[in-house]
Every structure is written in C-alpha cells, then in structure tokens.
Amino acid sequence: MDGLAGAKLRALPQLQRLLELPEGHSLTEDFPRAAVVEALRGALDEARVALRLGGVVAPDPLALLGRARAALDAAQSPCVRRVINATGIVLHTNLGRAPLAPEVAKAVAEAARGYCNIEFDLETGERGSRTQGIEPLLQRLTGAEAAFAVNNCAAAVLLALSGLAEGGEVVVSRGELVEIGGGFRIPDVIQQGGARLVEVGTTNKTRLADYQRAITPVTRVLLKVHQSNFRISGFTEEAPLHELAALARERGLLLVHDLGSGTLVDLRSLGLPPEMTVQESVAAGVDVVAFSGDKLLGGPQSGLLAGHTAAVNTLRRHPLLRALRLDKLSLAALEATLRLHCYAGPGAVPVLRKMGQAPAVLQARADALVALLGPFARTEATVGYAGGGTLPDVRIESVGVSLHLMEPEPLKARLRGCRPPVVGRIANGRVLLDMLTVDDDELPDLARAVREAASA
Ligand SMILES: *Cc1c(COP(=O)(O)O)cnc(C)c1O
Image 1 (tube, rainbow, N blue to C red):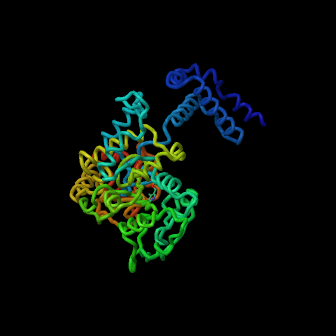
Image 2 (cartoon, rainbow, N blue to C red):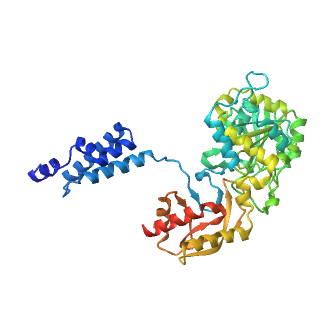
Image 3 (tube, helix red, strand yellow):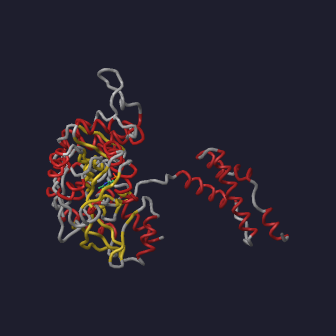
C-alpha cells in the first residue's frame, strides 16, 4: 500500500471517538449499543474498502455516523408494510389479497394482545373446539349442516381428498384439471392426497355419462373444480352439480366441490355477472365444498369447508388437520368477516364494496387526486379486475389518473420506493393510478408520493 492511501486510512476516526460525538450519543439513545457499534463498524469497513480501491477522501465523522443511522433505520423498518394498491386489481395476491374491514382489524388486534378462549369453552370450562366461533356463522350463511376452516383453500382441498379419497380413485373432468397460481395443480393435489386421478370427458365437453362410465369399485370421490382463472367458451358442456350429487348418492360415492373463489353474495347485486354461490353448491347436494376465505369472501387467508355432517366430521378427525389448522389471529379475522356477511351485508366487506363502486364515486376520487396533483395528472376511463384468479373475464369499469411527467418505467419504480410505496401500472405509455383499489383516505399519501417521486 502506498503512503498516501495509508495516510488516508489513518485519517479515519476511531470507533470510540464516533460514539463520543453528540450524534454518536443520539444513536445509542435511539438504538441498542451493540447494534450501533456493529453499524459503525460496517460504515468504517466500507470506507476502508473505498479508500483501498482508490477513493480520494476519507469520509468525515458526521458522514460515517449518518451512514450508520441509515443502516440502523433500514434494519428497523419492516419488510412487509402497507402499500397503496393503485393497480385496479382488487384481490391482488402479491399485495395480500383482501384488505380487512376496520371491525375485522380490531378483532385481530384484540385476539393478538392478550389471551383468548381459542380452544376453551367458557360455559363448561373444558377444552373447546378451535372453530367454535365460525361454525354457526358458516352454517347460517351457507345453509350447510356442518362447516369449519383451515389455512387456505389449497389446504382444504388437500384435506378433503386425503380424508375422503385416500387409496381410491377420484373422477375429474378434463376441462377442470386446473393450475391455480403458485403451482397448485389439481392432478398433483389428488396424488398428494394419496388418491388416483381418473380423467373423464374432453377439455370442452364432459357429460354425466362420462362420470357414470368411469366409476369402478375403487372410486371414492367425484370431484368438481371451479375453472377459476380461465374460461372455455364456444361449444361447451358440463354435468350440472345436482346431477353429479345424485349420481354420487346413488353409487355410494362422495361429491367434493372445489369452488375456489367462493362467493356468499349473488354478484349480480354488485353489477357483475353471476357466479355460483356457496349456498347454491350446498343446496345442490355436494358432500363437501371447499372455498377460499380471502378471495370473494373478503376475509383473511383461510380455506373453508362446508357440507354434510358425516363427511365434514371425517375431515375434522383427520391427522393432517393438525398441520393445516388456522391460528388465533386468522380465526378472529374470519369470525369478524363472517359476522359482517351475516349482519351487515356485502357493503361492509371492503373487497365487495370496492367491486361494486359506482362510476361517479370513482370519477370523484380521480378528480380529487388531480386537484391535489396539478395539470400533469389527467383522469381517464379504464378497467379493473377482481384478480386473485377469480372472474378472469369480468372487466370492472373504473377511472384512473394518468401521470404525464417522465418516462413511465422509472416513475413506476420511484413510486414503489415511496413511503408508503405506491404500486401502479403502465397504460398507453403513462403510469396510471387506478381509483378502483384506492381509498379516499389514501389520497393525501398518494399525492405526496407522486410529488416525491416526480421531484426525486
Ligand atoms: C384459488 C383457488 C384455490 C386455492 O385457494 P387459496 O385460498 O389461495 O389456497 C383452490 N382451488 C380453486 C378452484 C381456486 O380458485
């Protein structure tokens, strides 16, 4: 090492001296001392490396302390945090799917803070059922004899097949061998459940007779799967659910329905095309219907199972349940969400409220954002989606605000770096902020983020 670099290295302050400066004191007031020492060491090491690589000046003590503070701040800020969803995709799986209602968030906070009677029967003082709070609500909402919940719909389907079809055959239409997001493939789940898949029919047409012909002495389950994230149009045919239920009954089999998005409300009441409701599935006579808690139900991540007492109780006793059971926070959120469905109606469930917003409401929100931003922002008509692998072909009329500022890609990236981060999309060569998924009370934060990103 030449003398000059050596001199510059010697010019770096000692760690002890940094700690004694007022800024050093203030760091040890804000963070644990060991963490401050580690951060200062890191800042000094970085400076040494830079000097050895030919850096010209040694950073001064305040710069080193500033770097240490930035590192400590970054280590403190959570990786998972609130973001503003301006994508127009209501159930965005990457953004946490369903936002919860304030009452639901409050129920979660209550359950989290102290002890709760999650598995304790307050009347008898004995051990209680973990899903005691949600069962009567689910029965009331779905009309099913029995119901409970596990971690997600994928877990519910796995449990249903493991519990009801293990060692036997499961008959499924070739039009329903779906892959949901995240590599959840129906043929693989059947295999994981210890059963053998028997495909019937064709991609576009499967009739009742196809199922009838496939039944053998080892058939255990007829499985009906919601196509969820794709649609087959044109010449199509499928066996009606109630006919499958009658066939299963007649032949001593069980009918399992993977309904996926699982709406409890008639979507036509939100101005959307109809989807089979959970109630309709139950009424058609399925033995077990599995559906997701954080899609159109609008609750926490969970998978619900409802149906005939015998089949549901078989699943309740299955050893796999211990690995798939819900935690107290999700159960508190699910119970509170089901209560909203029971007693307050769909308008109280954020996901359903967002999907049913009137165009005038969206336009007013877009106008308010433009007023906060100025002339570089313009409102324009756009379309949003339900997302989460549900209603793939349903376009929801929406209003967006396009930003006529700079190249869209860097602007979109800068918006992600704001606090809170803003996730938008690019349309017609501009960043577009879709008002379908933004709340009125997020507008001030959203406007601040856009100004920050524009001036960075
Ligand atoms: C979404 C979906 C699942 C998985 O649901 P998660 O709650 O995300 O696990 C399973 N089956 C169908 C048909 C679906 O649409």
